[in-house]
Image (tube, rainbow, N blue to C red; front, top):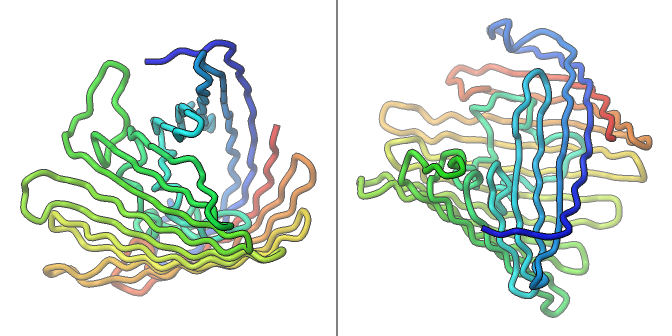
Length: 319
C-alpha cells in the first residue's frame, strides 16, 4: 500500500457520433445494415508526489454509453532513475501496447471494423489485465533510445482480482518487451509472452511479435509480425500487419492491411482472414471528423469464402 500528499485530479471527456454501414452476404441482421450510434466517455486522472520524491499517477477511462463501465485503469509509481512500476487493473500493459504499432488515421484494421474472431492483435492480451509492469527508465545510447519492460500476471487470461479478493485461476503469465528508437526516425521492437498452464503436457502458451517502423517528415510506415503457439490443443495463430500514413497539419490519411491465420490442427482446417482499411481524419479544434472504408475476407474465420465490408463516418468532440 502507498499514499500520496497533494494529489491533483482532472476530468476530461468526449463524445463520438458515428454512422456505420455493414454488408456481409448471408450474415444475420444483427451484423448487417446501417445505424447511427453515440458513445460518450469520461477520463479520470490524478497525480501526486511522495515524501521520497517518487511520483504516483492514477488513470481510469469510463464508457458511459448506456451503462457505466470501466474500460481502462492503471496505477503507476515513478521511481526516477529506478524506473517505473505500473499496476494494470484494466489493460495498459507494455506488452499489449505493442500488439499493433501500424499507423492509422482512425482505427486499427481490426478495431470495431470487423469480427473479433479474426483479430491479429493477440500479442500481450493474456497478461494485460490484473498484471504488474516494471519499465526501465529510457536509456540514451549513442543516439539510440532504449526501452524495456517486464510484466507478470498472477492470473493470466483473466480480469483483475477485486480488492481483498483472489483470482479464480493459478495460471500465471509473463511478458517482456524491448524497443529501440533512433534519431533519424527508424525504430524496432520485439516482445515475448508466456502463459504457464501448469503440468499438463502441451498446455503452455507462447506468443512473440516484432516490428519495424520508420517516420520521415509527414509519412510513417510500419511492418509487424506475430505468432502464437497456443498449446492445450488449440489452433496456433499467425498475424502479419503493415500500414502507411500521411499527416499534414490537421489532416491525416492512412492505408493498412492485416492478415490473420488460424493454423490447421487435427480435423480443423487452416483459415486465413485478410483485412484492409482506407482511412482519413480532419481535426478542427475540439472536433475531429473521421472516415474509414474497410473490408475483411473470411470474417470470423469462416471456412467458406465470405466478405465483410464496412463504411464508418464519425464526428468526435473532446472536452
